[in-house]
Image 1 (tube, rainbow, N blue to C red):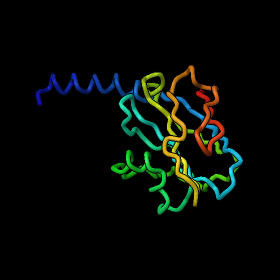
Image 2 (cartoon, helix red, strand yellow):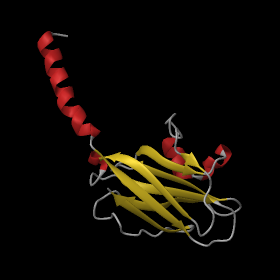
Image 3 (cartoon, rainbow, N blue to C red):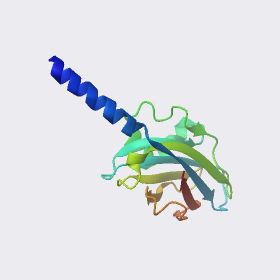
Length: 158
């Protein structure tokens, strides 16, 4: 590469990196319904405007053999070798609340990204895309109802 091109590339990186570094803390609170049965496995993840997997925020449930029941997340994230890196915890019991905090780039908010949650409970029907909500400032603090196991998902943007 020529020196002017390298200088231009370096200058562009210096300007772009701070913009990428801006992030917001997003706190997601998932309230489960009082269903009968074991604790729920939940996969909380992001998709982009085209519905493509963008990253895993949290997986509740420690036995990997059950992740196949979180079918939309499992299918979309299958090629992400780091999908579980530091984002797993215990399953969530009926009527319980799960609160998760993640740092998300400002560029994801109001840009067509969606928060999704898949849910599964042993010996009961799986619920792929139990909750789907656009990641927008307007939806922040607005409870979003689930289809089967989740009473509501609410998120706050700090």
